[in-house]
Length: 113
Image (tube, rainbow, N blue to C red):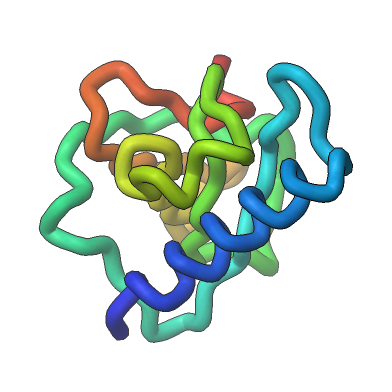
C-alpha cells in the first residue's frame, strides 16, 4: 500500500487546521491508524524500539502514523517524512513494543519522549 495519499491527507488536515486558527503555537499532535496492509516506505530510515506506555493487544500487528516530538501540525504538508513517524505495534508482547521508523535521525514519536 502506498502511504503517500495518507501522508498528503494528514498534511492537508494540518494546513487547514492552522489556517482556520484551530491549532496554536507549538500545537501539532496527530495520529492515524493505518489499514492492516500498510507498510513503511523505503524513505523511513531511522529505527528505534520502545515499550508501549500501556498494553494494547487490539493494536498488535497494526501500524500508526504519528507526529514527531517537536514537530508542528501546520508544517507536515511541507515535508511529511520529516514530521511523521511510522509506528508498528509488535504482536505477542505484554506490554507491547513499538517499532518506530522515521526519516529524520533523532525524530521520536510524540509519546516516546
